Length: 185
Image 1 (cartoon, rainbow, N blue to C red):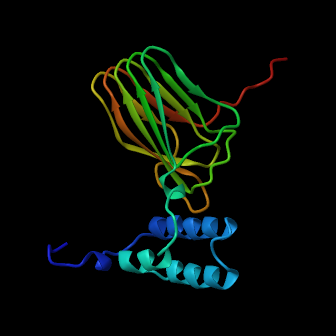
Image 2: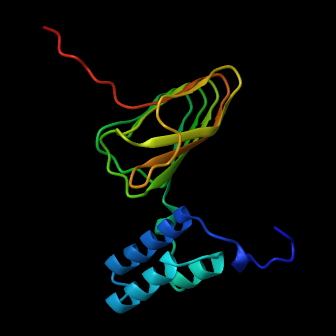
Image 3: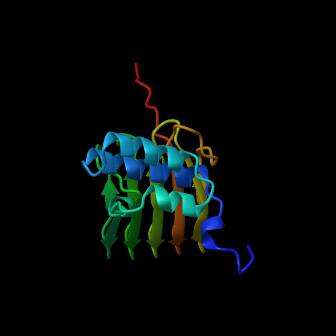
């Protein structure tokens, strides 16, 4: 993009529009917008072409929900989340000597896309996704381990998409669906 091009001319993606639509809907459910204004703002967001169009759709609305970030830290223990738990839009994991298990298979996620940022020095991570979810782990790096993603990497409409970024210095990353157990006879 040329340096002299104004920011409001930057084209937006479907994901950008989706996030703004969610923000407008939350504002309505919190009583910040009347139904007529909801309709106007949604139309503006869904037809937005540039950043400037999107900014106009959310003008005057608080953005605290859009910054739904959870930081989990551990020096030497495991970080484990499983069962029904609230999944934020951004999950930051920082662990020096422990492993990580994030099981999203039984959660309800309020976002079409979430980001998991991993900073693990001597531990490995396993991320279990709900059936049909997708993940992109291209932003995850490891020096002495490996990254294995056993789920599709391309986002699908109406399905959860997870972007995994960060560094696992001496560990590995596994992304998979829940295991199916067979009953023994």
